Image 1: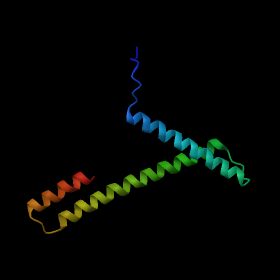
Image 2 (image 1 turned 30 degrees about the vertical axis):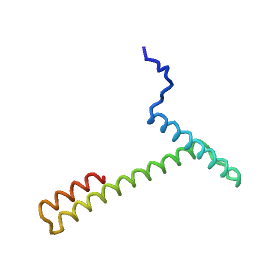
Image 3 (image 1 turned 90 degrees about the horizontal axis):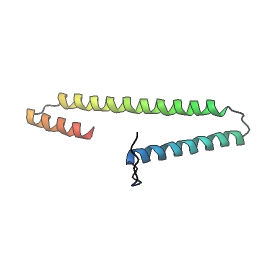
Image 4 (image 1 turned 180 degrees about the vertical axis):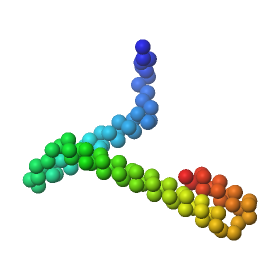
Length: 98
């Protein structure tokens, strides 16, 4: 049996997930309404699939770009003439940035 939290506490992760979901649903509804307003007949479920696909593509591209930037910085640090101590400091800074 699942414990019931009577304190009313909601974890920040759950709250952010709920808020994000509600915002996305609101945006999807506004896009659908705007498209209908200009006279374009579109299947709402297909539109939402397309929007979600686009979001996923953006997220994937962002992650890939972030990964490449990190690799490029590591390579640049290795290519620069640094003492071992300087290289270790730069690597530690890089790890904390990413």
